[in-house]
Image (cartoon, rainbow, N blue to C red; front, side, top):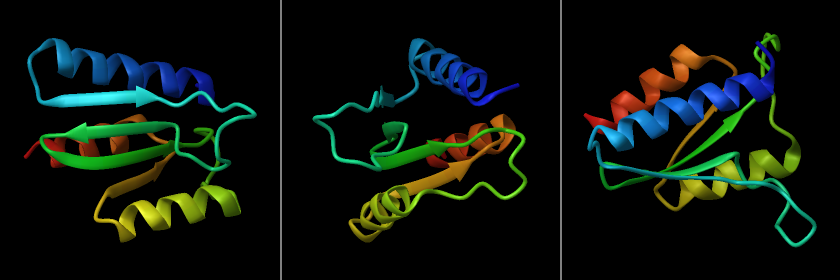
Length: 101
């Protein structure tokens, strides 16, 4: 699985949760020249909790955010949001389920 496939599977999972009536809102961020650098791949509200998800290539042993991504994740946490840097579908699902609890 590559990073694109991981993002597609996460998107399917989130869509399924929403379709089943779970309290999940999400936005897939598509970077562009008018956007601030480092914004995470997904912005979410899960069961009333703000969250951000940055996905990395599944074959990276120690996924590392860029300096800009690390900065954005820091400020989201500082503001009270939840963040996850992941390269693993099961880890991502478990994190989302924990936000639903």
